[in-house]
Image (cartoon, rainbow, N blue to C red):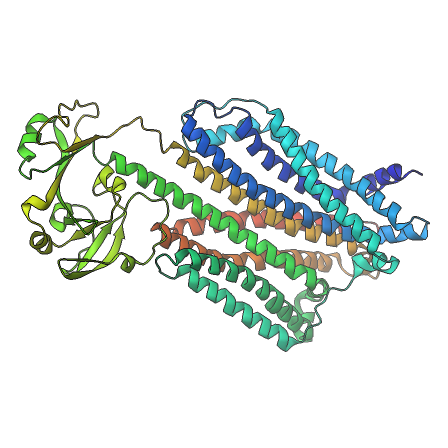
Length: 609
């Protein structure tokens, strides 16, 4: 029998097991292909060149993230399935096949899996490409019509990246097979992965994980100036390491304690599922840690999406706060402008003065806005329209005027001064009226006249030729320079979905593949008369424990990650936390139920005689 025919027979024989792998790999191809097709198919034609360029840059960033995701997902799924195949490869050694020929057999099987995965991914991506493009255009309101088109370059690049990644990982698997002894091959799928560390060491590891994790939480929510970016990096590293140690220390200690407590273990039919988790603990805790980190990334990505969406809307408000803003050196020109301008529904006059490359405005001129009250030695900063700020401590903006040290009590991002506030290249502070009058004389002041007209299409008879007009700005309703920013929310939502599905897929693949190793054990238990309800309960508890534990730890970490985002963006994210965790909970419950059904079908729906 040729190796190709043998590989085909193995593929058909293990079609159920390969199904989970094919679906996971096809999903990675599907996502990557749609972003490739979106960039190269011309679906976004109609946007300005500037918006197209910036959206293209965003797509490239997302593609880099997706390539890293593809590498991680393909490597994990392939390693899990390679372990389950090694026993079968060990049998082939006794049948006379050399390690080299077995590695070629493994390569052929992987080629079949890869070919089906990439074809399924590209075909499904093609079928849903129009829907994908339509969602991408409609959600951020880009104002163009999405069309159905297929890019040959997108197909080629998708296949190229997948083949390259999958080929390297397959070669790595072939190398592993060639270096494995017959004993290693035969025992790989049944190797006891129970951690041998002493209980005290596990406790210390768990405590260290908690300490590192809490350190990460502290740096995540810590106020600061330019050190905020460094704090975020420290927090990220600490959360990853702390999560890994929590699962590597606390989880084994918890399960081993449950296993040693016979009264607890034998009650409520806990023996089977606890022993099953302990048996594979070394691989289990690593999978749990990876899944938890992916879920934290998913929540953070969604939080970033909502945060950026709110900030972008706020940025656009800077240009829409007033219909026209006039700068003048004359503080008594209000009546002059009122007589020449159309009827207005709202207008303000704001004195502005400059000192030490900073601008100052008196509190009374902007008191109609929701600004915090402050003392004479305090001030409020009027921020520009920024997507994020590296400053989360208002004290970082403290300044000095007329010999008085001013402590900044809040960073306000409301469009108090409209477009001018967004375009100022120097900080703008709101200070007390007494200090403003003492520090600046009439000749030191510039006056900003802001008007919101009753009619949107009102004419503007004034220009810079008027002697009282030093500068003028008219709001442009057709300005689309910020249009590309609207797509950031869509990218973040897609990343949320990708990370979430990846996390659920890892747990499903792990548990479903492990179930094939337990077929003989469950078959024997059924033969000796163990009730099926007991076996079903064990399967439910083992699957649900893994999903539930990841969800609980993810909730705690995601709370702090969203708190950090909220401080940077000055946006409340409590609703995002609740919404994202509810979505994750629902999807994890569905995936858990699907996993339970798949494992029960594998272990219990087989003949026992």
